[in-house]
Length: 102
Image 1: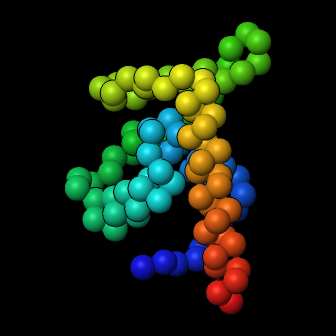
Image 2 (image 1 turned 180 degrees about the horizontal axis):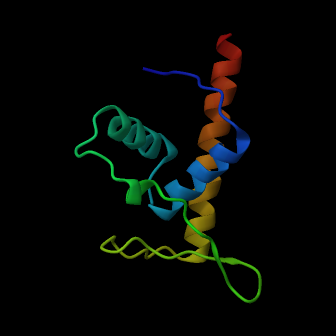
Image 3 (image 1 turned 60 degrees about the horizontal axis):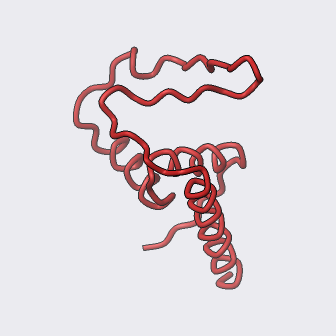
């Protein structure tokens, strides 16, 4: 089933980045987050929801640390860029289809 939700552009960018980091599609990531939100496996603790401080490298870019116990990322820079571009193309295509259905 398809559904259109109007989300802030900043949130869309964050979703795409997270999907790329986890080597998942945007659709898979959003479905997982919605499922976790609707059917939590355990009660969430305050520690899980504390704001994350962004660690910056001396040259001004953020340092992205992996979650302990998560699988290592084996994507090269080129593969990451390709994944993000594919996710953006998929999102653009979905928006196009939704626009012509109205």
